[in-house]
Figure: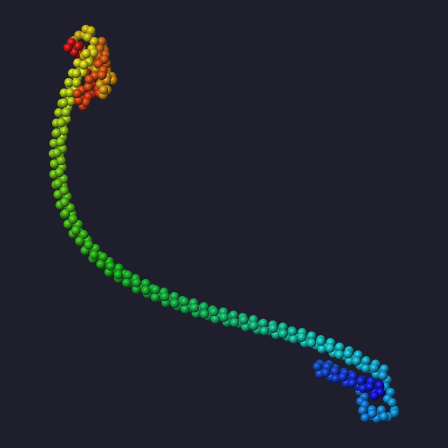
Length: 329
């Protein structure tokens, strides 16, 4: 096969492939404008064969055909770019519209959902209000019924309490009357018994008082008699003790005095329990100071004085009267 025929065949094949490619692009993008038609010269192989056999050669401008192919390719590439841009722009526009539509649809869905939620809330609130109203009505009815039952129960209880109180008061009054009568009878019996007991006790007390009075009189008489006898005994001892003291003190008297008869000197002598003279003083002077002084000196010299035979007869302060005649004995 000659070189020119081979190149021509390749050009035909390239145009066919390009045409098929454009057909595929047009089927994918129906809105694209159809490409510029290309005139293809078909050669009959028989005629080609005949031509090869024909001695007349076919002259083709190879360079010009290549330029035309390049120009066609460039135009087709530019058209494909423009179509691709349109396709991309359309995709973007469609995506934007779809996104806007989706946003709008979402807004409508959200609005519908919000309206549905609000309606549901309103319905729930209405149902809750109706339920609450019914509940309150039921509670009010129940409260009214309970109050009526309570009032009736209170009235019944009050009537029963009044009846019970009346019966109890009557029973208590009857019991009180019986108890008062019984208490009065018992009190009267007790009063009589106590009166009799008091009378018996009073009689016994009087008898006992009379007996004690007699015993007291007897004891008093005995005590008085005993005291009288004791006093007489002590007085006798004291009289004897006075005589003993006078004789004992006379022993310590100064006998050189020449005194007239009839003088009396009364002195008070204070003794200690041992008989020692604690003090001696003239209570009734004789009128002769020398005689009175001699009596005082005699008592002081005689100390301690003898004690009585019975300690009961001892007297702390004794009074003694001295006379000049006692010196002559």
